[in-house]
Length: 66
Image (cartoon, rainbow, N blue to C red):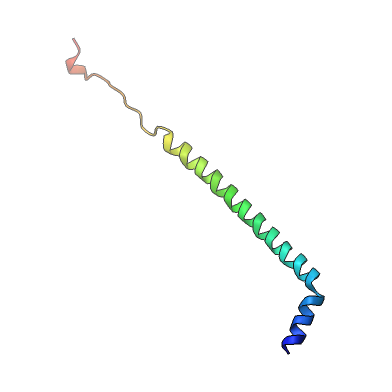
């Protein structure tokens, strides 16, 4: 049984190499897309965190004028 499996693997080594290379390429593309999304989100978060969200006005009260 073990000999049959080894023969099968040896006969089809090219196909397995192509299959696993394709899977590795697909995983790499997925990681690139996820990393790109993370970088975009981080840029947006940094921009939002540095923008001011409040305004301050100083306005004298009428009774203190004059």
